[in-house]
Length: 125
Image (tube, rainbow, N blue to C red; front, top):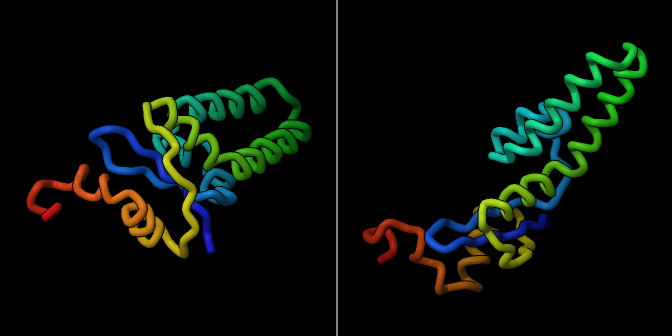
């Protein structure tokens, strides 16, 4: 069973964010964050990486970069959640489900008022 947070904003579809370790953030760092539209954390982590490589001796830089990668893996989804909240979305629910589509189904079953709010009019019927 996996956990998801559902975030809502008037006139937009719900956004689901998984609560887990972010392997994409571990291996791709700021590029994964940018793909998730977490622009500020992506820019800051990229700047931190560039500064570490430019200013710290090679052996120490490798250790710091590894620590940065692990930290991004541990907090990647939280940084995405932070970015979503700063775009005006609010946390609506925490959902336990086996996959993202099931989590969305469970969320819409709990919140039937949202079922047709983000679909085109012909699909909402």
